[in-house]
Image (cartoon, rainbow, N blue to C red; front, side, top):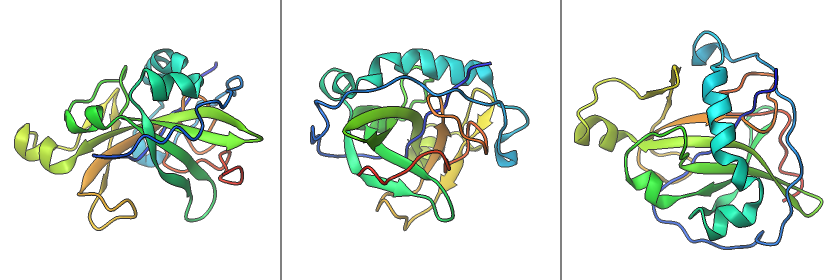
Length: 190
């Protein structure tokens, strides 16, 4: 079965450099149904498939930056042991709204290779204070049956504490569709 994944860690105010506005995007990779144990029982094909359907248009990075409201946030993120997350393009309006919608991820994740930007995943992001205090939610967020991970402060992004969930909708991750780091993503093309 084909499934995909999307990932990102992103944030509030950001600039929208269109460094890759002319980059082309190639086709999707196949995805396995394995998953990291810390993110629930089985991967949710419905969440992965929903994300994939909703982000199909953003396989062309020009659509993300010109019509989707996404802008690059920092550079490429490499994993602490193996793999990477790629380059996050964040929609700051979606980050600030405090809502979680599988059809509107806060961040899109791209891998750059040989002059091409390839959509590999998405990341859902919500500010921890906004989630708990403003929305009166005592529990961490869950989307499509998948629990979000907490990122305290200080963190590598210089952000206030937040919750995040990666979904690898366009690049298979042998460690699971909802794991942060993907050994099949690289920062070498950056």
